[in-house]
Length: 348
Image 1 (spheres, rainbow, N blue to C red):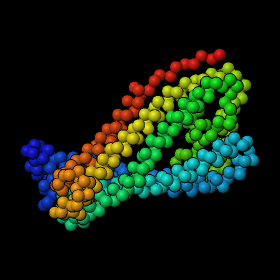
Image 2: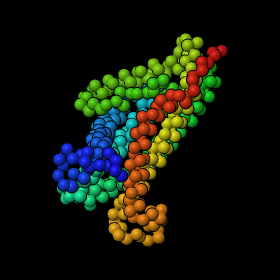
Image 3: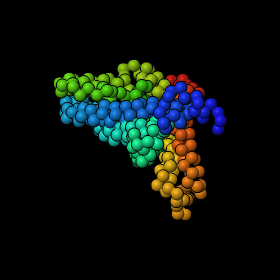
Image 4: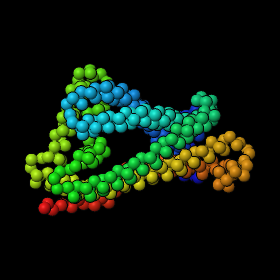
């Protein structure tokens, strides 16, 4: 098309060497966003793999070794809450290490997409077209397990919304405090308005000596004891009942937002699934060459020719990964509009 976006004369002032001088204004705009993804996604994956993964796992394992200190200074409920949370954080750190490696792999692969936008892959400077296909293949392999985790996140959020609604029903019936039997790591965190954020859930501090870590662990257990007393045996019965009923109302409304977040995860899964399929077509066409493939392969291409499949696949992938950040940006204010207002409960 003879428009500004596709007219190379508008980029001639850059004096790019051949074949980079074929780069259009649109390709430069795309390359800028791809370079941003290369830097930001790579760094996000690295931080998740190290700070959220390896370093945090090392810290959690040290805290689990100090768990005996809590047993001497807290009751069974507090012990169970701390132990359950530490075990979950341990598994989460292991998962973050794996997911971080996947995310970083996707981020690094964007380097070759930047090169392709500038037509560098038409040369052998960074490996040429084979290197681009290899980069896309790495992205596809890394994206596949991430699609699974997106589904699991959605399922987890739907489960959390159900737990919130269940807790709200129980709280409505509570007359003399919250029964300790329902207090788990998940329910305890849900009951707190800002959630339960123990000190080990923040940025890892692996240089802390063992004595300092023990003190922090005991302080965390002490704060849990104080918080539990406000829910189960507060001397001011009227204030405790008011707190319980207000929390029930909050959980009923917050459950709506959590369920919306689950639906958003499903949207992420659909968009990334489209991107996965679209870029897969490009890889498939590369290996097919001039051959249109067997009947089953033509079915994978939805009956399109190689050229049509390549163009449509790239368009679908670029479109899906353009829509995703828009969803990320505009979903929070949308959730705020859709969230029902918390109604004040009357205390008997």
